[in-house]
Image (cartoon, rainbow, N blue to C red):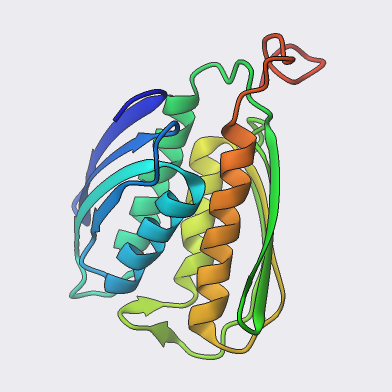
Length: 196
């Protein structure tokens, strides 16, 4: 891993997680969370966001997917924040619209230091594989609040839950890639306050 990097380890009574990230990567990823669909989404996130990402998580999956999914989101958010450092030179804002067959996801974000989540997506089923579909909102809430990001996720239409989830993760990846990219015209941080 090279560039803006972070390594976060988090261990609780419910989960044990190690996550490494490079914001200036090539999309290389490995994910082993015990939840196949989450692994798939994390690898998509890395590939489409040009992040290098390694995630290893052991959680209490005998209970359900909740603790593992949420805690991976917490650690990912912390790692993004740490890797960004003082946020000097970053574009700060990013947005993307991604279609996945019949589904469309739109993600708008601001790496502002002000954590907020708007999540408008409707899933038909309770689960996709081993993950509860309601956990996608919890995952992105954890990412937003631990990275200090304002994050709006909207799915105006879609029928297939797999397609909806995949479009969300890809759109988030592309919006994040834009927001963390540097612009030589930015002196310090992109804020009239002088800090983010």
